[in-house]
Image 1 (cartoon, rainbow, N blue to C red):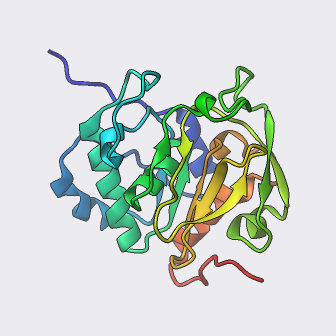
Image 2 (cartoon, rainbow, N blue to C red):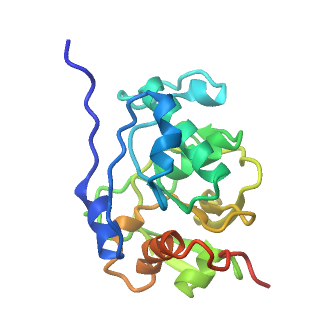
Length: 230
């Protein structure tokens, strides 16, 4: 039998490279012993979108609408990679599933199927470069400092989202239905996660700084942490 395949859209690597870094793709192959030597060679990490996390990783049973491509082995590898990266205070950006993974690593849980909880469409049918709903941005938060906006128009390609918030995470953006759309850890130099696909919106001036700041934090490790300001 052939082993499972791992895939990643080139939009992620292109966005990282356009922001000024060299993108290296790390396969979530399940060999946790290689994480430490890999992180020794990394300056920062972007945790991408992807299939649903196995709900066993946060202590729940499977919902009937759970995606078909869950992979517990890959999940556990990615979660441990995220755990060790944040323990080292490496710059971390989570996108879509990446935000959900950060929440799970911190002991949080997920809504497994948002249509059970809201009428707002979080899984758009439009082109991925098109924005389809707004988010409100918390004043003084890192996201506010980066985008210089109290509100953003975002794209949306998910049917899961944060339920119980993980430890030490602070929400910094919400959808009109109250769902958390971005979080950060104020104790770390750069640990930010967004529910939308920021890598597909870098052509918009308000979204491009999200990727650029990840790269800046990776290139300048002694830089001032991107903390909330009053």
